[in-house]
Image (cartoon, rainbow, N blue to C red; front, side, top):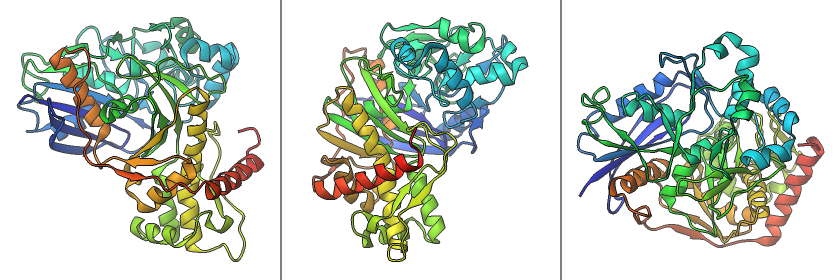
Length: 472
């Protein structure tokens, strides 16, 4: 029974799962915290991985890393970090993204790399670096993504860093359509072309740990898989098929599905990513998801369990109260400087229960807009798979089918990003044509769709959004 490990290096923490390579049964798991903020020294991710891995990985045969997408990791000629990595949720590059879009036009970018640059994307962060920190920009010899950096460390810092097509597709300078880097677009952003990681195939190994092992994390000779981005890792961990659309309610909110052809959405709403299996992963991302509920609970002076009780006391539509949940700005719609807002306040609607319900529905409505956008790219929506921390809320589960308008399946709680990385490691270890078939276990199915209530909720949300943000 070979064991494999998967790493989820997210914004907030490093999670590691150890699983049976044949069945996917989780045998052990650990977590270590990352520093807070929208930039982070990459060394902190490596330190957290080593902390979480201590005594855990002695007998694993292979390991894979799935990391937060888009983060800009810059290395100099000596392989040292130039500056702390700018993370996906750092919006200081919003103006740089706008200037890049104007150079090619939205349709030009979508056709070139599947996505229209936003503040979150690596190409925009490099443009910001060139403008605001020219001295640091001049020192940059290599540009990696967060998962690339950890894979590079696990493999003992080889001369040629590697990545995969899934994570590379989030840079906005690699094309899912052609499978090539667009160095001309990188030149537009940074003014020159630094060294970039080699893009590996889905089951292609990145290498092995060295003779001394990487700081004691793994035994020498352990296979390291290509790794991928966190959303691609979640898709692989869930084993989604056509007709399945994943809605993930974590720090950010994401809507994504596997598709058999690349998407090129000139509106910029849908990012045309590649997945971790050789297919494509059209994706919509919001900056605000589970933290909307946490912030609302703090505002009401209750914990999350208290928010849950309040939300379930109110009826669908929250008495007409609408929350636009743009608490940290927003990526979809592209409103990096927006703030959250509460609409339709009346004396009889201003209750804690209605506010709690409006927070749940506002969070879900933002993602329902993403579901519509993915559907417009030709994706069949048969059901929604609801994952992430907020998917454990019964208030969220009960509201989701009505807001989304389709049945909702809630898989058992698990670290699906880390499981996807482990499944990729098992795939690379086996050298097979397809990833191993792993069972998710028993899921909760909610098919109680109230179409009339859903239309009312979505209509009120849309009216509030277009009134306050007519060009968003």
